[in-house]
Length: 193
Ligand SMILES: Cc1cc2nc3c(=O)[nH]c(=O)nc-3n(C[C@H](O)[C@H](O)[C@H](O)COP(=O)(O)O)c2cc1C
Image 1 (tube, protein in one colour):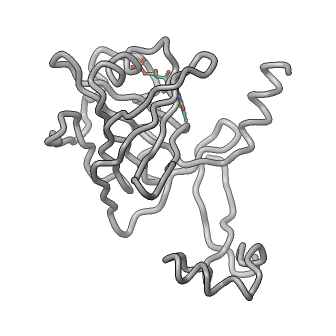
Image 2 (cartoon, protein in one colour):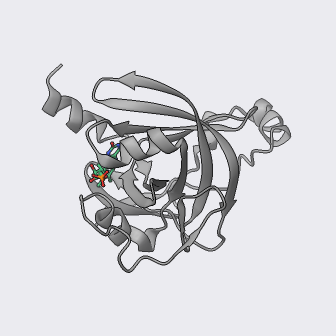
């Protein structure tokens, strides 16, 4: 498979954007990642995929602890700031220190404090399969979306039908039982900005 074409096609998978922080040897690290996913409910686990060539990789590997922050729509600047190598990546960023060690960035949409359980090599990257020690969300914020190389937002659109089309009516009760609300929500429009 041609790499450029793979990259182009893979970009069609819309995702949120995270900044992952770590602390190692008295230094703080932060990196923008779209490759973050929840993994398991019992036990609560999440995974991140990090390029082995970046300094944050070694900090996460050596310390075994990180905080994954889900960025809100107003935090596009943070996504850019943490996607470039810099001596002081946290310049101008309001943070507190977590009990686990890494910095916690203020006013993100959500954050997960994670401890690495397993590492798996994959091409140029390492997959960190991690236990989630704690997680928090903030209310009233919208997510920042990454799609085809650009940042955007979700918007509600009254004339678009919700993805409940994928949920047969007879199974809606199963979803509610599992704590998932099948409706009402709507597919958002996506605008590159
Ligand atoms: C939107 C976006 C998503 C990214 N996702 C990833 C990712 O999932 N994994 C990764 O290793 N790098 C990803 N990067 C690249 C890193 O953020 C970049 O290499 C960064 O400079 C690494 O920080 P460091 O050099 O201080 O460790 C992404 C960059 C952007 C802008």
